[in-house]
Image 1 (cartoon, each protein chain N blue to C red):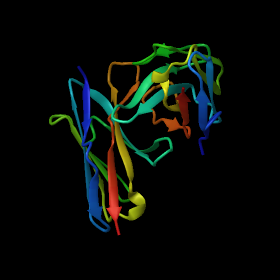
Image 2: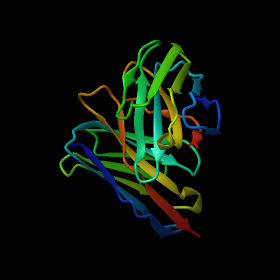
Image 3: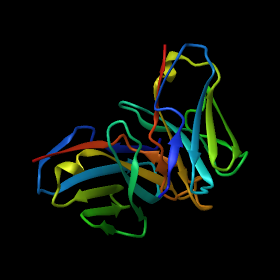
Image 4: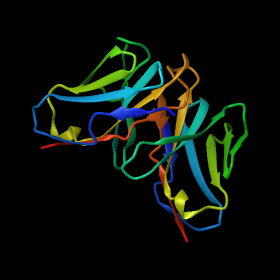
Length: 114
Length: 113
């Protein structure tokens, strides 16, 4: 079974702090994704990566950056956390060279910025 | 602009009945459509994928239809059980984009015993 793990289930940070969210998958998937999920807005793509050191902006990249130094790990960075970044963050991975494969999600990190 | 709509109101049905959820899209030509299940506080779980040249797909008690003329997908759960209670998300993959998924907001299903 595919396993996608995220470093924290719950996180509380202060405004202005630098925040790192880590995601690790164990199925050698090429593609990895970061989403945020908010009530009434659904899942929105922040960034994705289809190879090591490769990254593409999603629909809402502002205020975020990512890093993918190893195939199994994809990190989301909030350079200076703000209260409007309080949200549920979900990481996902998918396999193959085609990006239309089903995505496997981690359990999510609920981030609160105070 | 591209738009995906799922009924935001919760669907309440009695155990044993068939649940039907709708996913409508506009200004979009998806090559694939996927359905996911999400339980509270958890990440979505992939259920089914249907391609644009397929009209219907089945998996156990689940059935998905894809009508590219109506720009609509229907998701059916037959003989529904309380354990089927969850939020169901549809997601579209365009034929000419990078393969990113665009998700609907999801419909919450409540199956009462």
